Length: 324
Image 1 (cartoon, rainbow, N blue to C red):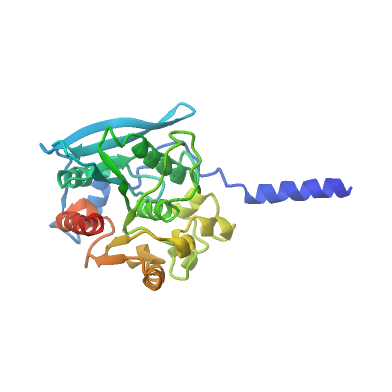
Image 2 (cartoon, rainbow, N blue to C red):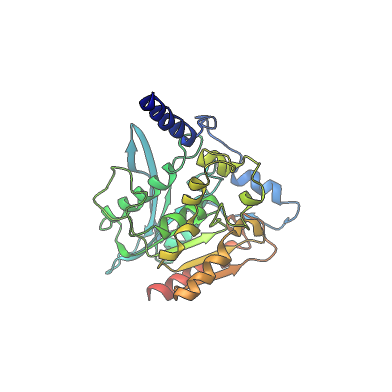
């Protein structure tokens, strides 16, 4: 009987901690896309313009490359590199799209990658498995694997592997922060693709991505009964398994962070949970952080002019100071 009760306890514990599969639809989610967001923002911001995907003469493009294959599922990455031959390897940027971990597409940031490549950065837009297909931490594993692929292909793309930045918007900002803040560790290095190579980065640029799901200022903390995109990614309601919500929060690992962070933020304050706590802690540690606020802007401001060009300039200034 004692043995049976022990087995039952183990089974119940496992069952309770197992992620819910009810949100795995296997169907693409289009709730966030550039055209839809543009239409929603036009009333308040009638002057905005979507930045187009347009080839630049000084930029070489290699699209739809495969960085990993999981049970026949190919994961893709696009490369945008300076076309002029450089004597020295150049800094690199991997760009992670947003969409609530459930929608969005890497193509949304191709214009950003093109403009950054024109400034001399090897820039990459990365695909990762969304929460309709795979739950946390699959997306984190994928992005770590993509960075390993960049290290493995550093000669091909003339990448300086000591000058890699991860940049993300919205959910991609949270992912970028989590991948960056765990850089130099084996945490989330779970895929077999390019596993002998490093997944390290040297800087993080977070565009409106949360740092915490559990801090007092987190939207999820203030709306614990609501099942939103983060719950559908983590596979648990906010009222369940706080350990998983904590593990997925970049702020959890702040004590060990050594990487410089640039925060580029919209006027939507709820997207900045954990930021002020993080920057205060980094100030005490002597780790550089910078916060640039774009006043009176929608959440997806980085996709539109007139904010796109100053945002690109801010990124360039930050990285040139960092990697000079």
